[in-house]
Amino acid sequence: MRAPAKKPPRRVAPPVISAVASAHITLNTRPDGSVFASFDGYSAELGKYSGAAALRAQALSTGLPLKSFAAGRTPVDKEIDVLVRRLARSGLLEYRLGHADNDQVVIEPQMADYWPQTPDLGGAERIVLSRFAYMRRRGNEMILESPRAGALFRIRDPKVAAALALLATPQTINRLRRQDGFPGVELFALLLDCNMLFKIDAGGGDGLRADEGDDNLVLWDFHDLLFHTHSTEGRQANPLGGLYPYAGEMPPPAAVRSRWPGQKIKLPEQHAPSPTAPADAVSPFTRLMHERHSTRGFDDSNPITLAELSQFLDSTVRIRSKWQSTIDQADEGPVIDYTSRPYPAAGSSYELELYLTVNNCAGLKRGFYHYDADLHALVPIDARPQDIEVQLNSAEFAMDAPGLPQILITMAARFDRISWKYSSIAYSLILKDVGVLLQTLYLMATDSGLGGCAIGSNNIDLFAKMTGIEFHVEGPVGQFALGRGMRDEG
Ligand SMILES: Cc1cc2nc3c(=O)[nH]c(=O)nc-3n(C[C@H](O)[C@H](O)[C@H](O)COP(=O)(O)O)c2cc1C
Image 1: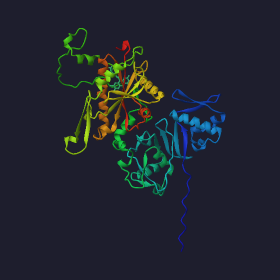
Image 2: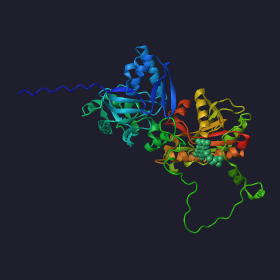
Image 3: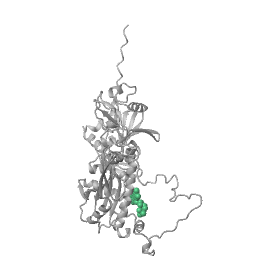
Image 4: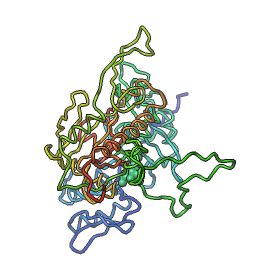
């Protein structure tokens, strides 16, 4: 008896990537053809369009396939392309992958310049999950994200999660295709583009740490890279800064801790610096500690001078001496170079570099510079004027200041310098070093008759653009505004 003929596999149409306006916005058109998005009482202008384009743009509320306008075949296609890219740059767009009635995933951009890309993936190519990709519950959804990705993926179909679980070890696309519920190669291509997956050379590789990225990436622990990207601006779209998100839900926690019960041992009173305290009752350092305060407004008619800046850097961060050692003074192993500087640093690593965005300094041109702590020299970096402006404006905003700082000091960490040695605590040591350096800068500014203010937020993507250095190699971890304070700022 002849075996029954095998049924040919059912051909399923490939899933489609569509652009969708974010759920929290509505798109409106005025009679003159200008389109704007409104959300939370705000509106964002998106430009003027023809009646036909405005009509087609309505499909953005449910999903407009990217392929339907990407080729720009008609003038309306081109208009839609402009509108969609404007929405994307403003962070008002999401993307869906799936079929008309069934989304596999919804893609939420985390960076302004994210645009879904589907690089070619041949059947014989081997892919594996990045060790930085992870799935978690957010509200009522399951999301897949990674500190390396420009977007996060909301997983709508459990089959997608099952396919991802399989990718804990390298798999060829052909093998994945044979699995029940294969979600289509498009999803894997999108994830590859986001660095959630990576390819393994035909030559071998087990898909472990050393196969993914350069040496700098190899040195990052998962939790450290996640903390870095999620506690800074530039690579994530979460609300950020002093937004008091729980003010309506719980009372403010106390400024001073409630007292421990039990007997108190009162400590003797010290002289506080005051005009009436005897001159020798208070040490110069105590006086300096008491005088230190944050200065946010600067006197632009009498800016900090290059000589003052030079003195400031020399006294706080310049390399004093150099030395060498082996690991734990062993006879074998690599010789490690060390430096000594005026402030303490974890393991004498001195991983922090200072970059100066100069707005107003007598004797120094406006621009972006690296401070060479060895040569005691400033090296100009060719950053775009608009990026310099954005950085200074962000500092002004963060301080709620009346104007731009005269100099914005960005502390950038050379991550490898510290993670080559320390496991689990590398990033936390960097942040502790930032705190130490911030106080050092505060005290020196006070001692020099200058003013300064720490800034808690910084944009790691902007810094990467200004320096051309990838965000995981060297990146900002702290900022300090410096200048001559306005008279009433002391
Ligand atoms: C880590 C750190 C981050 C800070 N971030 C900001 C900031 O983003 N904006 C700001 O205006 N002040 C910032 N400050 C300054 C504090 O608001 C200030 O130190 C505090 O209010 C105490 O005031 P004082 O410094 O004048 O004594 C920061 C201070 C530190 C130590």
